[in-house]
Amino acid sequence: MFVRPHAPAILPFTRGPDRLLIRIHCNSKPALSINNSSEELLDRFWQARGVVDAGQRQRLIDVALLETAKEELAYPGRALQGDLPGAGTAWLLESADVTAQVKVVSAKLLKLQSLFGEDAELDVAAMLIKEPRLAATDIRVIARRLLEMRLASGVQRDMLQLIQAQPSLLLQESAGGDDQQADTDEERRRAWEFGLSSDGQQEWSRRVEELRAYRQQYGDAHVGFRDNDAPELTRWAAKQRSDWRAGDLREDRANALEGLGFEFNEAKAEWMRWYAELAASTDDTMLGSGLSRDFYLYNWCSVQRIAKRSGALAPDRIALLNDIAFDWTGADALS
Image (cartoon, helix red, strand yellow):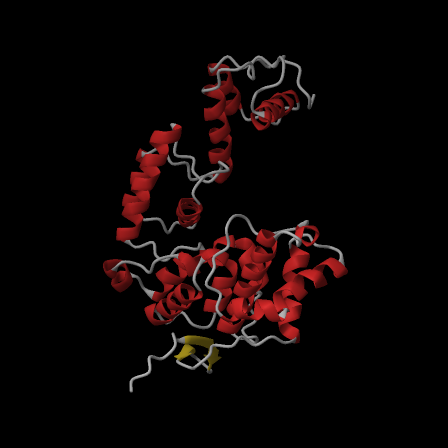
């Protein structure tokens, strides 16, 4: 009689002198190890999320390690809905929804620890806080991405450090066929430093189209300085600026970006982002009377007035503000 095996259980990395492998095998019940290091991991996570009271942190840890929670930890099929739980979570444990959130987040943390191995020198709590989408991603998807990264190149020695710095790498699709074959190990490593699966021509062309759509939406290409800018496009823009400063940006790419109005200097790009918003404003921000509907834009205007009075505002910026009839005499909260 044929017996269907259980789904593969993912075991920790094993490391040799020059290699990093993922071991996957089938067993009858993928039990999750719960030990002192597990409690320490959960304690670090809740402390980083603002739960400063040790007693409250212990309550949250106990919820994860109760007998009723172990099945959820062993088979974390649920995904986190909404934001990561934080400082007030321990006060809301009477709510079934909040308790479920705590179990799901705890399960993902312990599964990540199990996946990497306790000796991998990775702070998975910090990774989850930096990239909350990991809590909503199936652990098998994360493991598959790790294996793809391992097979993609010879970048081995510092791969875990790159993942620690850019945990979003665990959520991205691998580079397309042409890019994967064309990228050198150094080019791939350089892309990974910015949380990009690749910066090969196929991927680069796709990002340029996203930048074009961004410009159509906002009227400028100063990506990376608005709160709702897409994280992937922001990281890609940061890499282009870094390559440009280092003299490593290809001339054809630089010309294409300049044609879209992309600003390579970060400080100027951020200033121009606010300037563009001010130029399009229809309230009384430029007149300096009353409060703007946008508190941050109003404060930015205050900073420009103060900078000009102190002689710290560059002449080209003064000229740009004069072009839109900026009122330098207006009273403001920061004067």
